[in-house]
Amino acid sequence: MLPIDIKKATENQLTIIWDDGHESIFSMINLRKQCPCATCKNTRDNQSHDPLKVLTSNEIIPDNMQVKEAEIIGRYAVQFTWSDGHHEGIYSFDFLRELCECEACTDTVAK
Ligand SMILES: [Zn+2]
Ligand SMILES: [Zn+2]
Image (cartoon, rainbow, N blue to C red; front, side, top):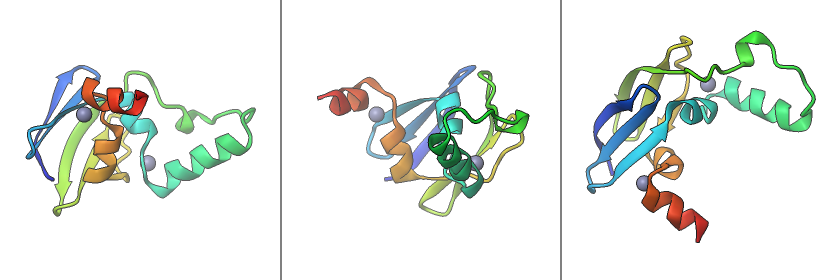
């Protein structure tokens, strides 16, 4: 399973078309929040341990987060560069399919 095309659907939504014909839709803010890099993982873990923790300014993810660039890494992942300059996250194709917010995928989860 490989992405054939990655494009901006709207100002804050991203579409990925896969080689199996599936068309995934993602809200950029959600993708950014799910960033799998070590720094973001730590931030999320700390938040869940201490929900009252006050976020520092560089931990706050603005709602208008945008993907600046999407680069395919080998045959397994996509690396996004975000409008806040963050680019450490490597999103494996499997992970992206799990995050897919299209109607078909969210339906499956709901059932
Ligand atoms: Zn990250
Ligand atoms: Zn989907």
